[in-house]
Length: 277
Image 1: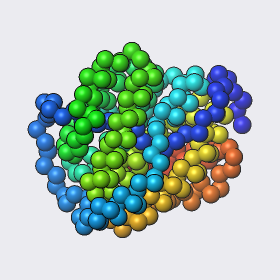
Image 2: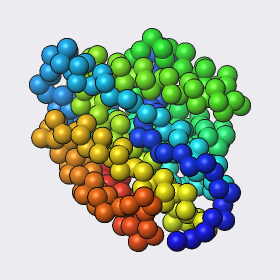
Image 3: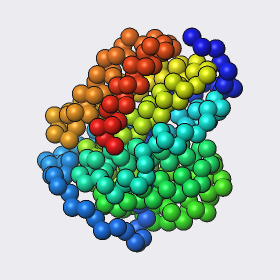
C-alpha cells in the first residue's frame, strides 16, 4: 500500500453523488430533439405509492467526493468529466436523465476547484437536459442568476446546487417519475466513482482514496436496492445488471481497497459509464 504523499485529509465517506442541476424557467432554450423511444415510465404507479416508496430515501450530495479529492491535494483533471458540448446529443429520456446525473457531479467537481468557466459550462449543459426533460420547479426559476451572482463563493455555490437537487428529486417523485429519479441518482454515483478511481490511479499517494472507495459498499448496496423494484423496466435492466456486478465484486473489499481491486473497479465502472456518455 502506498504511503501518503498527498496532504492527508480527514477521511470523508464518499456519498452517492447526486447533486443535480435544474433548469431556469423562462430562459431561451435549444430546439428540442424528439425522443425516439417510449418514456422511461410506461405504467405509472399511483402517486401515493411512489411518494411512500421513495420519500424515505436520503438523497446525498456529490460534494463529499469532490471535497475529498480537493483536500487530498489532487489536481483538477478536466478530461475526467463528460464533455459539456455533448449535452445536446442525447436523444432518449434515459440517456438525458443519466447524463444529467453525470453532469451534476462534473459541475460539483468544477465548483469545488473554483473552475469558473467549467462551472458555467456544466451549468449550461445541465440546463439543456433539464429543459428537454421538462422539469420545472419554483425553486429554480432564478437558478442561473444565483449561480452567476455567487461564482466566487464556493460554499454558496455548493449550497445552491445541493438545494436545487433536492427540489428536482421531489419534483420527479411527486410527478410519478420515479424511474427517472432513480436513474439520475445512478448517473451521479457512477460519475463520482469514475472520477475517484481515476484520480486514485494517478495519485502518488492513494491511501485516502482507497479507504473512501471501500466505504462505498454501503452506498452501492442502497443504490442497487433502489433499483430492485424497477430492474425489469427496459431502460433500467442493463444499468441494474452493471451495478449488481460491481456490488458482487465489492463483497470481497475490506476496510481498504487494494491497488488490484482499484484497477478492477476502475475498469468496470469505466465500461458502465462509457455505455451512458
